[in-house]
Length: 263
Image (cartoon, rainbow, N blue to C red):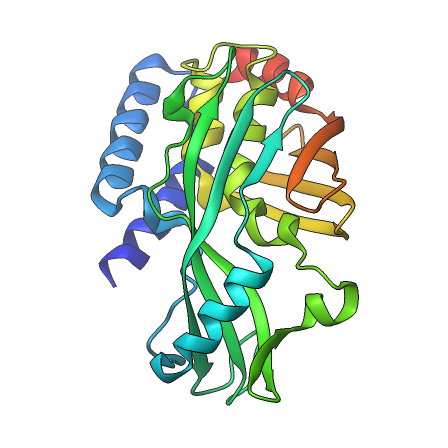
């Protein structure tokens, strides 16, 4: 309840912020309130919580099959290389199987799914500080699975022969893409950047494509002049594990120009 209340407060503060940001005293007071609420709930609170004991339970008896599946399809270094040379790499670890004990938004009672952690091994950038990785909860959802002939099989593997890695770790890469795009036009420590990066609960993201690449689409629901902030980042991959950014579209420059005049 405390976290839900805190998140509601952050949303309310973000909305009211547009009305009072021009007044320096009120702006400073608002910033202190936002920082206080965010500190009290922790950085991981605004990320999607994949494991919920209310609707799922861990299936420890399936762990040998899970380990075999992960070793076959996920036991490789995953790399993202942005256009500007920024690099992020890591591996998916600590994968467990869960069973849904009741119907959920994306699953029905009795469905099986795999949950894991994306362990970041390396981050290199000439333009972004390491603290851009401001999250602590790198949970990933590997998707629903079934058991066939005593083995675990994922739907992506059945369709494509390989897992859709981009769709698994896209939420981990979003912060880096947002920071990379906005720091083309303003400093990482600027008010404009903080306003976007702190309101992560207002960020929607999707990934689409196949094992040869795809697109990570980001929409930040903070609006300026009636429009949301958006970024579309396109990736190519030859092996399904190393992703090269080949194109990016966004209206962040437009947002920064607006923010410098209005925040």
